[in-house]
Image (cartoon, rainbow, N blue to C red; front, side, top):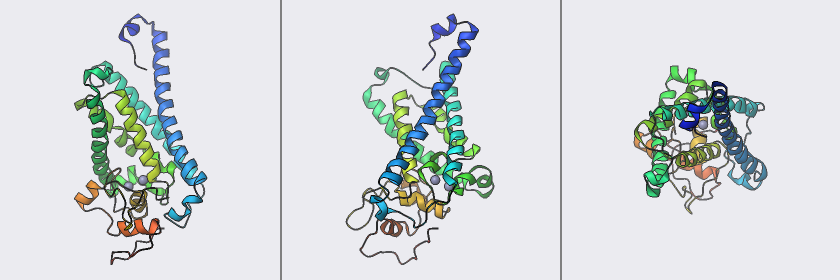
Length: 281
Ligand SMILES: [Zn+2]
Ligand SMILES: [Zn+2]
């Protein structure tokens, strides 16, 4: 995948050109496949194969309008293209010594590789939370986040349905992190696959997360599907991606979130909140 320095020196311009083209093709194929397999896989398993079994956990009564998935896939392919361009820039920036990508696991050891993968997820959650709140400023929203919210009732394919500006903002996380932190390609690979999986699940429209006996989410520190579904129904709340930490710290979690989670899992017990349930369109 990466250009061998010695090879580069020996290559004639034509070979060099072919190498760059094939490098970009590999990066583009990787980003497109990640979306197709990630979003398509979640759609196939959750919304199609298990659709009937999961009917008790369907968050909304209504189904997304016709034509929505087609629009989501088209805009998501543009996002994959932008991700591939940024990936290409990361390879070149690494060649120039700008980014801290390393290839030998032994350089920092296995514990560092595991810790850096987890840290990447935690840092991305914070980056996503604050950039997402910025995207919700009225002027910015119209220019860069409107398309994602056109899917009021999301599907797994909503995962990459971004305006150009939002795609660039999302893609910016990795090169920024590589300026300050050494990362192994395998750590990045695990991070990006976790990202698409959580992203596609969060837009699936079925509550996939386990619940405790009292109807609260088993892992309350993680964002459930209901958590992000509420964000699409009522945009002023629930900006987090993987964890509920930032929404709770900043006071932006929807006041009836836990009751809406109980409603999504058809919990038979009492609902605690006095507040009325927010209507899900
Ligand atoms: Zn969303
Ligand atoms: Zn939003």
